[in-house]
Length: 180
Length: 119
Image (tube, rainbow over all chains, first blue to last red; front, side, top):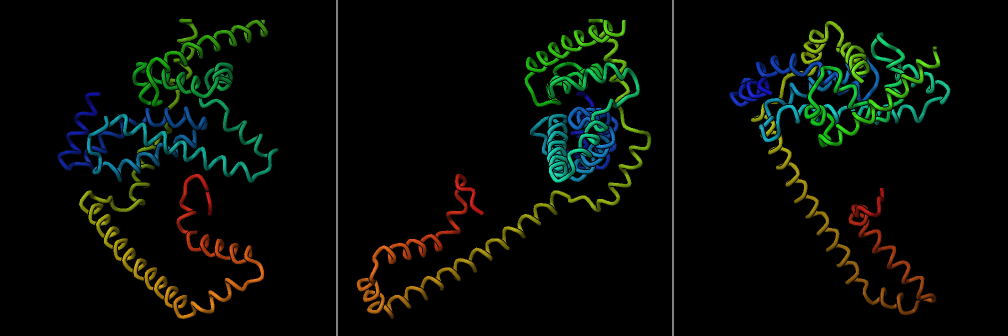
């Protein structure tokens, strides 16, 4: 990404503050999208995105340019999301199962008000397929970038996308038939 | 498939942070305190390393002292220990006690073995 080169140059010139100001608008939606695709809850994803940017603000002067800036940022986001999911699971294990069922249903509710039928089907997809669909369609990103965000090979992401599309098409057609 | 693609694009395009995200982020950063610059981070790591080295020396001297004290006691009471070991009614009991003492001595090493998962 050309923006990454400019940001990296600023960091290397010791202007981390300026680099951070440029980085936030470039990565805000991407970090949020990745966090949402993993956490499946809008408020939690936004909170995680904030946490990631605070981490980036603290760590930016230490970024040495060995890995691509985007790869570094996505790895930090994925790790933070995994920690959040672990913490969520720990909380879940000590709570009432009846209450948990409701909480999980709320957490898995569609993020956007648009097309609840589609979101319901997206939520039933296996984790990686759901993640690939969200990241790919959020901004019509190239598959290569989605692969980088997910930390997976490009062909694997293509397979996830292909399977997800096929499942969604079948499920939505069945839904339409039921309505008719 | 084209219709599905369009539907997915429409649904996912709404996925974005709420308004005021940047303002909240600025407030969070202000609350997080000053950033650790690379020089300061390096100095902090050096200080930690120096402290750990000092502690390692102190611990090493303590362990050596305890070992010497134990050896001196064993040397001083060697005849009594020998008598006790040879004259013990149950040699298995002596063996078990020796093993227990060894295990207790080696406990700090044993608990670090990855396969054992000891606490």
